[in-house]
Image 1 (cartoon, rainbow, N blue to C red):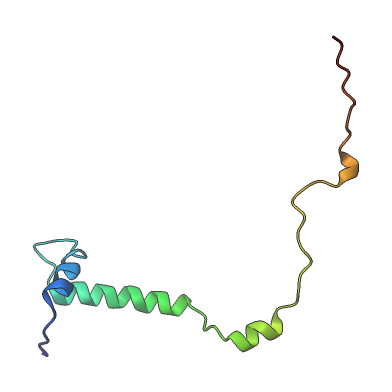
Image 2 (tube, rainbow, N blue to C red; image 1 turned 90 degrees about the horizontal axis):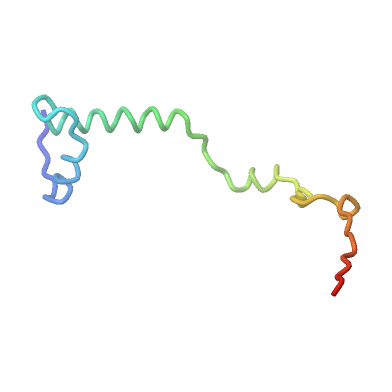
Amino acid sequence: MRTFKVSDDLYEQLKNFVVDPFDDTPEAVIGRLIEIVNKAKSRWSPFDPRSAAESAEPQPPQRSFAPAEEYQEEESVVVL
């Protein structure tokens, strides 16, 4: 078994990940964090900016409003 030192600040942050204070040791918490990272890594896809730029075709701007012909303006008559 290896032993390593961590700063007090890092140890305090590690304690924030304790689920069960009676059973969770620093080793258990670190192991759980490693499992989470490994699961997340399996879902990541590597980003290659060159291939993203090559495959990205310019798209026309999306219209978020209705065409003008759908709007009908009515004249208002004010009687005094």
